[in-house]
Length: 498
Image (cartoon, rainbow, N blue to C red; front, top):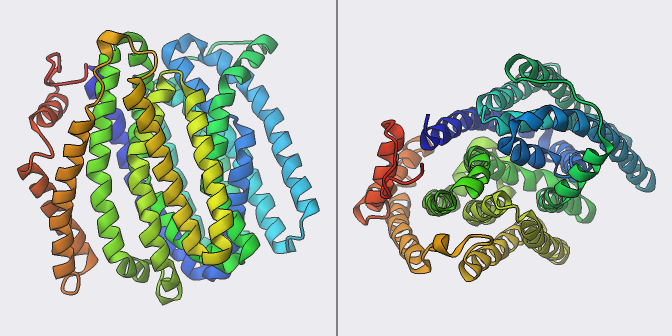
């Protein structure tokens, strides 16, 4: 199987799994938010954000290290798993100690403390599951992780429906996460010994020190990501209250569901880019160029459509009690729009062993995000938190793009330095905006006469039809798609990635 076909196969299984997770996650969020109400849903959302933020301590970048290094030399898998398991046990102990210290110094209600403890246990269990998923990704056996994540979403929904049927409170819903993560850890261990070759290995203190030294930049990136994922909910809880957290997360979780697109794509592409950095920098560059273009193509219409239809979306999913979430969704969707192409740069530089540079960019933007939340939340509440997301993502994209365009990519020899043309990118964005304008006009005209289930597909068809007409998708793109999906080896320059 050529690389193009393998990428598409891995992307396909991940996308299918993410779509299934999107569907089950959609219903989970809808039922839980409606059943618990904004206040209790805010408590659960706060606990998830709080433990996710501190949960960075359970990994410190070790999963990304496994993916990158084992993708290069698979014989190292057993050594990484044995030694990193030891590290993770120690890190989980630190994780729980920090949580207990913060609880001791705070005045959280008893119910909130119980929810935090239960979710924290699930986070610690999940840390080991994610380590094993890293091994699956390194072997480019994404289907095993995809199955696990799908099972996760199915179990969460089924157990949530059971909890609703049994009239359980927010503590009962927090317990669900523990049960689900125990099941998934058993599944991942079973797949590891069934499908991957594991040999014996001893604990190596020198190796542990080396692993931590290489992983800490990934850990910093994860920490900054946790700040951007969690700190808004934590600050909303502190400044305003749990009801605001519930309203805010009703919109935010819809954005998170849409993140399956870049997550699935780059989970498949990252190990391939890491290998291309060693074997074919031209292919690495082309893969990045195409990724950047396609994510602009997909993200812009999602942003426009969601902005126009936010009130209908919130009403359909959550009901009238969550209508205050509408403006939050209209703002937050644009953080996702700019986040899609930004992720392309992040994956590119990580695959080039430039994770320190990625850590610097994400760190700078996380500090910016933190400052904007401190300024905007007390004054504008949940809308201010959404604006902070958009500003920090725009800043990240500008910094990454400036580094790529000005520096011509790090560590790429001169003969490979024919980077993306800024003029070409501007032309692509112009065609995307032209197509989006036609879609905008159609939605404005038909919004009152068509329901969402009809309006959204028709809008998508119109957008891509216009995009083809204005050559936003060009001959090279069609050749690449044909070479991949018709199983032809794209050896020629026009067809693309080898």
